[in-house]
Length: 253
Ligand SMILES: Nc1ncnc2c1ncn2[C@@H]1O[C@H](COP(=O)(O)OP(=O)(O)OP(=O)(O)O)[C@@H](O)[C@H]1O
Ligand SMILES: [Mg+2]
Image (cartoon, rainbow, N blue to C red):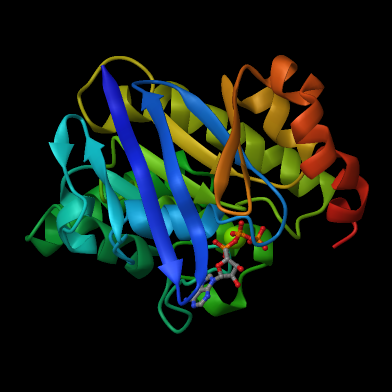
């Protein structure tokens, strides 16, 4: 089954088409990497899918239901959750309360939301930090917390926008492990569903995104220029010219 379907999506900012007729799918259980140069339109695409921005043209379907002009909270309830390129946790609140806020999207009762949040904090490797004020966490843990809060909404499609940028190699490895764990176990442990989760990953570090992804999509100046297996995409001449040739400068950002 198709988890996420994006058809001919166009989003303009004045004269600039940040997304220009973008079409792709993410299958149930698939990890799809979304790559491309700075300003290519990756975050804009996530913002459109999550309902934070509305496109001028095109449609977005989540498990067959159209979500194109719905509000972010409605799209979240239909199973899409996301993290932000620059973390947007509630800094003055505890780790646990951040996750409880995510859980309130699904559960009204405080007790049930707290119970789910406690399980998720342990699952995501933040056990023991429940009462820590979120703003005092390391960047790696802030990003981990944002993923945990996103999971508390019980998504079926998770959008991760540079969840590993700015991390040390060891922290990056741990974050990759978390994404793999979420992909493999989250639905079974928390949603009573079998099978892995659909995850879309925006990332600039090719050594991370290529091995992690089943499929890779490349954006350049708002247009989709490649969609295929990581191995094939990394050999694609257009992709090398548009992006991969700059990968070392991208890594030095
Ligand atoms: N709210 C906005 N208003 C005006 N222009 C915007 C807005 N958001 C993004 N843009 C522009 O749209 C284009 C795509 O930006 P976007 O942030 O989606 O790129 P990106 O691929 O996520 O880049 P990066 O890798 O640097 O995060 C850029 O030219 C950017 O300046
Ligand atoms: Mg971005």
